[in-house]
Amino acid sequence: LDGLENPPAEPQSKAEERLRVLNAYLRQTTNIEVDFRSLIVERYQTKDVRVLIGTRDTTSCNVGACSGSCAAMTTGSNRLQRALNFRSYLEHLYPNYSLPIGLFDAGHDHRE
Image (cartoon, one colour):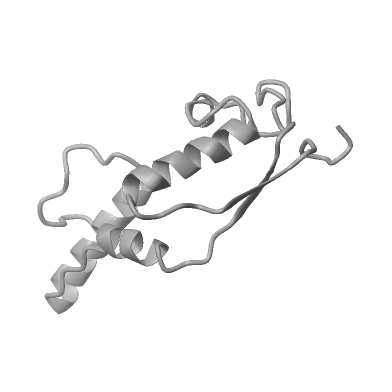
């Protein structure tokens, strides 16, 4: 889709780039502009999402099976921390929302 109108100087992520291209395509072919980001944010609150996490799922992702990439590590150093940070982010994004998190006394593989 070369030649799209008003491309941003630098997209923030691949997902944002896809949304930009989709919006540009819709605008050029149907004269419809959809704010997909707002639509996704609004619809998330209607979903029944639950997270289960072990209280001992604290093995560092640098040595464990979860991703230890730089980007992933910014979300937490282990699965438990990542789940708690995700919940905090959602509660910041949606002030009247609380992500149900079920905690159980085990690690990731239930043998710890």
